[in-house]
Length: 84
Image (cartoon, rainbow, N blue to C red; front, side, top):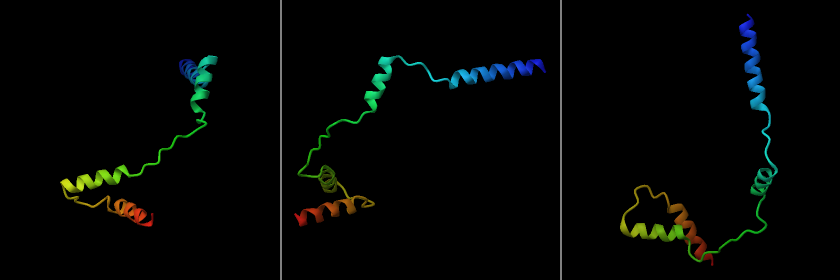
């Protein structure tokens, strides 16, 4: 019975050690905080041609699609060009 109590206490002590927050030095904490911050500016590039549509056209010239999985996207792009 004593061995079981000792083992249980040892397991509880190990668990308590694992659940304790690790001490992190200040530089590491600052690095983590900076990594979580979102950038002030976003850079967006507006493309004239959709690269997916262009690539799909090239593939369709070489071979026939079996399941036509890109038709909806391809047609959506074509409709947008008509509106412009």
